[in-house]
Amino acid sequence: MVEAPDPGRGKYKRYRSSRGLRARPRQDPEAGLAELQDATAALPRPDPSRPAKPPRRRWRRRRVRTSRPRWVRWLTLLAALAGVWIGLSIVLFLISSLTATGVPASAVAALNGGGLPPFSATTILVMGTDGRPPGLKEPGASQDSESGGPVRSDTMMLIRTGGGHTSRMSIPRDTLVDLPGYGLQKINAAYYYGGAALAIREVRSFLGIKINHVIVINFTNFSALVNGMGGVTWTGGCVDSNIDGGTADGGYTLDLPAGTHHLDGEQALLLAQTRENLCDPAWTDIQREKNQQALLEDMKSQAFSLTGFIHLPWIAWYTPQTLETDMGAPTLAAVAASLTMFGTGSTTVLYPTGSGYSPSQGDYLTITPTAIHADVAKFLDG
Image (spheres, rainbow, N blue to C red):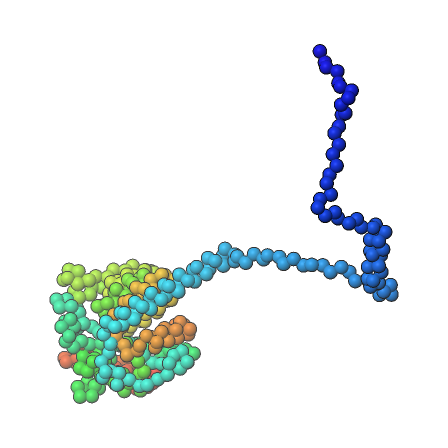
């Protein structure tokens, strides 16, 4: 049962809020309106004759993405790695140079002063000795190179580079000359009697040109250098030769079919030493000189190729061990740069105009002064 509401009770209860301790004064609406009108009237009025300025636009600074493209980052990384590779090669070259054998002071004193390639032409005498380890039986080769005894210059080549050109000229080892103090001798005997110094003086006197630098190739380490640069490529006819008596006598045999071959260090050395070729009875020492020039050109091309860059630390290590020279690292680098800039250039062999035989000298070659002058002029002109 629902209880009826009490008529004496109201529905709502009313309360009056307190004004607090301090009552706020009421503002007269009309007075406030008057103050607002006065303030508005005091503001400057725009000149109707002047065009209104557009509202100033606030520019927001946009964030630009500064990250480089991926190919740039890869290129930077490759450049950094290449720099480290080159730096390592330089360090190895310097360390190897400290232990390498240079030419004696007498050879340095016999040289003519000259400019620095590639800015000026420089003539370099390159020689390789015919020393062999004891027990090997190649005819005509010295057998006491390991004990420090005298050897002959098996290879004699002049390289001229700088001043805008490059050229090479080989001198056959059996060329007959008048060696001061020793009479008529083959030109390779100059190294036997007086080392690099006498060889430099004899070549200068025989050809009438100045020699600025000298390099003596140590064939003991030549194979290691060729292997260190990844081998060399050679193209030619059939080669069948026996070095130091051939394999039957404890030596070496080189057998190359006609065509193009990638030679390792031992094969390159055997080719440079080959004087008799069973494939070609007409093969002479002149052909061997041409092969040596071709091998040096191939080695230069290999050293300055991508393969050479990959093998750069090995090349840097074995080069000072293979080349005995008066040149320091800066001059060698300048010569290498010059050879790269001016290319292959002309190649010449000092061709003999006659030949002969004597019991003391065996077979020898001769060349007239006129022929010498013509070949030298071609060499100097590049």
